[in-house]
Image 1 (cartoon, protein in one colour):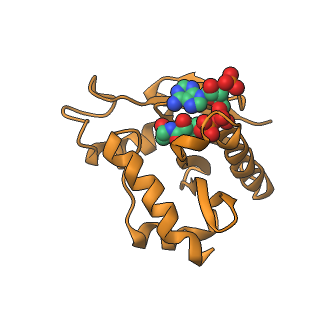
Image 2: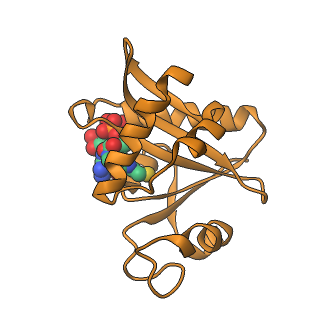
Length: 151
Ligand SMILES: CC(C)(COP(=O)(O)OP(=O)(O)OC[C@H]1O[C@@H](n2cnc3c(N)ncnc32)[C@H](O)[C@@H]1OP(=O)(O)O)[C@@H](O)C(=O)NCCC(=O)NCCS
């Protein structure tokens, strides 16, 4: 919801400063607000997750984060499930993420795959990443590619 945008941005950009995800601007989150889910305690957003649909009809799970003191309670797993359900309901079958936390995704059925599986994402987003010094999939990258294919 609109009232959550500032808190969503705070969670994402706090983690971005730690290097676990890419930063997002207010414009980006507002533009994709319908794709974001939150976990909340009252009015406080304690976790968030979004998705982005690509032109090859794949769907990327983005901006997954739980506030530190609420981690390890299954919130991240539930947020991934919610995005999966929303994607499935839209008819999408190929889910992926670039993540520093592949274990959270493997619990949801994702498999670690080579960067080459995500060529569109890699060329569009990774080329702007400060960790990508010499090209997509550069050795400085701290994220693994994970993918889930539905029948
Ligand atoms: C990754 C993150 C969202 C997981 O959220 P969470 O609410 O703690 O997740 P869950 O409680 O549902 O944990 C699910 C499983 O993943 C594991 N896990 C959680 N965080 C993990 C991490 N950073 N690295 C590896 N495994 C992790 C948990 O141990 C748990 O497994 P278990 O059930 O065997 O204990 C959270 O650690 C976080 O916000 N990290 C910082 C931001 C980040 O790295 N985001 C991922 C970018 S895609």
